[in-house]
Length: 215
Ligand code: AMP
Image (cartoon, rainbow, N blue to C red):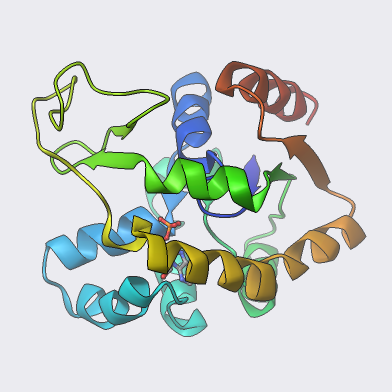
């Protein structure tokens, strides 16, 4: 089962993907998370990606495609995986299709997370992430019990550099220009399901569970 979570930053893809991982045991392949851990580990890949990420721009396609090609060969991907934040451009989608075809596989579902820009700005600007375990909080919608401290592991909660106001606008415009053409691309492939992701997370989850069950 290969599922793509397609949507703008802040649409709730990561949160919902984590829930799907718990239910189905397919790994969540978040290219954003992979790049951030590579930056943390001070690897050449992370160093290359950081300058793009800090500006809210996309990391070059060849770098990202190589990352996904390698990661999907790991044993935990054998029964399926969830692509969270990949593909983000048409060339990435084409490369994914070719890669899967060569392994006699294909994309089973593309779930499009639909949310207005105004709502996304609210969500992203209040988002805080645990520097230790990656748990995500929101200053208004899901605040931690103690300010700036993770409820789960006690780690410090930080704002991602790219969740700062000036970078948020750039990321949204990059989404509209470079990623939203994928909606049309997957409509044509007839495997896209559009979800109203502005609803509360429980309702969004119910839609996801239903669309995945149908495959
Ligand atoms: P995310 O955590 O998914 O919002 O990704 C954070 C940043 O990582 C993005 O703004 C991009 O700079 C980079 N990134 C993540 N996934 C991709 C991708 N598929 N293609 C290009 N850049 C990506």
